[in-house]
Image 1: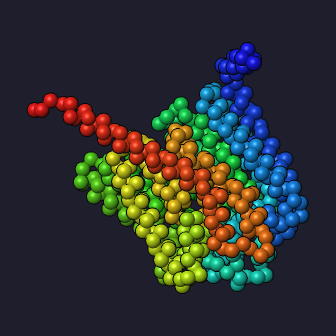
Image 2 (image 1 turned 120 degrees about the horizontal axis):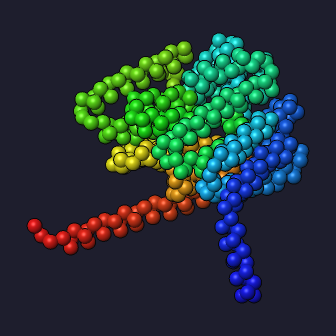
Image 3 (image 1 turned 90 degrees about the vertical axis):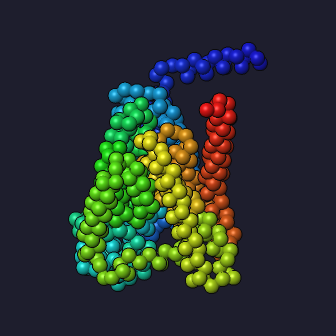
Length: 509
């Protein structure tokens, strides 16, 4: 037995010592990914056939073919293993062939997923409908709802027929342009909107490569794989057409401007992101503080604040001017009543039978807002003390992770796409590891929690449902976050103790 173990150990060491092993592993992982998307996902939910059935979601698919659920679970498990292998291999492989493998895998995966029926994305048809309202009916999606246009050919597909648009004016403008160019074809519109968000995916890749080539050339290939071949990014962007990749792209553009010391353009990039989806507003304090600290004197800081403030105000004015009908144009109050898969959802569902729903929702939202702002300011202050180039992307990632894991009221799996571009810029430890792990944890909501909690009738009690749902999806990310916080605390304490000991050993003056 001992001899067998010794031989096995030598074999393993020999295999991992082979110089070509990383590129072979990367090639295998790169081939597996598009194959899984094609043979498991697209084959069972083919756009050209399934799109004819409005609102044909995963629940209805599983009712028609129960084996699909297990097939998808196995598919994501295979993708997770391939992603891990590719992540390891891309750290050790170099050369032109590595570029070819990663880009080819991402390209093939993207093309395959274009033909996935967006069964998990009623949001895409909201994008299309709001674009059509603006392009064909001269309606205002901030005031008018889809319910006013029941004869539109896309109306049967729309999920939120009585809701105004929750997205920024830039997104509405490009949605209108895309809808106008796509006409009345359902398949044409779906493919067009998928390719639209795909442009932001390509832009994200370009800026990840540019940033890492300049700041950390040894990590370019690893960062490229970790973003471009991330299953959640591909699945939610090309598979379901979610527009969250716009946030990722704008954040990466802001990092590029930050490392080039174009501080006003950093804020312009973030405000542009907020004019797609408002969440990038959370990163602005960190960008402002880091920029102000890096400027040489008070005169430069005043000029920066003045120019940036005027440019931002002009950009916001131009963006909102076609839609403006008063401050209700940017009224987000309806969102304070939406809770799922979050710490706030657990609290809200346990208290709503005992407290007036309006008061409870307003109070919960206000507390979450105060905590979010306080944490944002704290993380921004911390980042201002660090002169490393990674302080800004690290601060942005920390702020958005805190928001998603702690104070966000309504958490959906595609929100994690915001984070993955920033994580790709950082070494694969701590925050970036937490981000990638969370990108897989959130996928389990549809595959593990939803069938017993959301697909049954009658539904389980809301308190039980939200507790189970949130702990199943967020439990592991919360545990890893607590570990990272505890590790940071103990390391900081040890460093202070070491400095104190060193000072005590110094001779008096």
